[in-house]
Length: 580
Image (cartoon, rainbow, N blue to C red):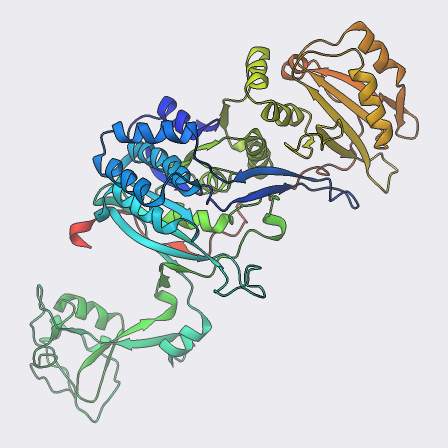
């Protein structure tokens, strides 16, 4: 079964992933950009300013945790990494970049451990730390395991190219491609030819409107059966079709033709065996010059296309309907390309920084198994919804690390109250509100929008989450917030059972009538974590317009267009570096 883990990927990999159990790793880690990234939720018109939350803070600082992880690096068996990290520390000092590289080094070592011998790793980064990460990857994998540096053009323009800037704008990201050994999985992918390429390369056209080009049949280096004679025809009869004249491997005489034993050129050899040339002739794929020299006819519609190169300018960023509002979301086509090129159906794909889940989505789409890890409940909830929207019940996966019972929920609340709040809000399919800004939430931990059957404008639900002890006036305070925010309903979610007084206060808030007065819901609803987990509690409100609160991922069907690149025909191969 596929697995989605909530937690620190370092701990998850050490505790849950076996040696050499993964076929392909894609990681899009933080870039140390010293920026805060906000997740933008879908929201009704007029409430966009409220519908965002700080997804993560991409800033690193040297402290006790960084020092402890650096100490661990010096004791692990890869001495190249230990020496490189000491050199980094001597050069950089104890600063944010050193803290970032220390974090990455420990995780890259674990990723190397879990990769199979035929496995590959793609690390996605930008110029902030790419030069350091390349050296670190050399130390972890060995410099001889470096395969390529791929450039992805993520946009056509960027707002860092602004007035006063004295350097070019950044519009590309880098993907470093490494393998664990010299024998790795590789599937050639091809892109369709462009019109300009066809016009320049395939200039000839048959009477059936098939475009073709002629290519040389000779080579400089001999190898195999390539030093044989080939017949030629009279110069007065150029471009006569030859396939009708093939008899007994060209030994039988044919009226109207002269036979000469010829080699291609002095110092050159045939690029194909004699049998191959006979087959080309029989298929009508040889044309002869006046000199008698044959040329190979290649039809554009029979060629696979342009082989995959390391400059990827054809994949736009995740925009429009594909965008789920996650700040660093990558396009699905980008991950499809990587996964199709470097793995086979049924292989295991790992994304240890899975964000909104593009890598696991792509893996599911192209029939791979997958493992995703993220350190925020926000991302885990987003991925769960994305997979369910895209694949319905066809995608089977298990979520590990998020609370499954009251005890584990209480543990999360004690460890990180914000993660607990985000997770609790997700239990009622609502948006978290504001984030970790102290005092900024105004008594609100979550928002949800809905429509009554006759509504033209959205209605609001405010949510409060309590992970600790309850106070006597908590419910009354939430009702005041509801009135202040002009919300029709308020949800009070708590770890502990509300008191009788709280239940009385909730009942006093009355009811919200809907469906033209035919139905009603309590204006203030008390929900417990235990009740939500067991299904005995649920939020009670109308919802005649689904998908008001979250952007919905596109449903995957057989009709969905695949990546612009297509795999080559035939089976994939394990590439041997000795025979590249």
